[in-house]
Length: 210
Image (cartoon, rainbow, N blue to C red; front, side, top):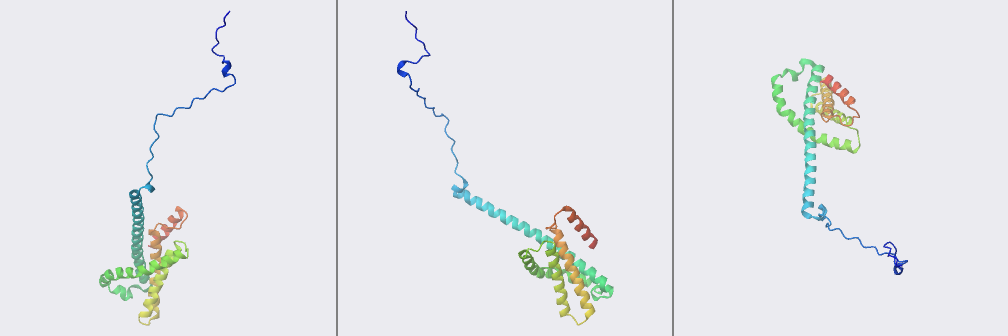
């Protein structure tokens, strides 16, 4: 009697041997081609450097324009505060107010010239305050006070020896410097404040002063 071959049985020659594992065929899909990075392409590095330089220049120009606008507002507010303080201290008897339209005519060239002259010490004092890490607000108002007091002292030393008038002018100029420094800080958005409520309170104080 002939036994049929069992398909599931291994032959005696292959007993105890491991079956050979066929290697996995490589995928027919090609590997993606990687483009070179920006650092490997000189023209791309040049474009990137130019873009960064343009961004820095734009930021500096925007900051300078914002500070220039704030300085202009500070000069206007300081001048208005000086005139108001001088009128409050001396009244209409002061020769400044008796000049009338002539005063306005002379103020057109004098005020821009004075603003340009004060810009250099303003920048120097601002850099000094930043170096000493004086908080904004204190620094802005302090710079205005120093410049106003300096103008008052200079006026008192160069004018006729009259104690009362020199003191009133010095006090009026110091008041104008204080308001101008506060106006500059306000125009910059109250940098250094920790909450919106504090900025709103300072806005209320500024509106009462002006």
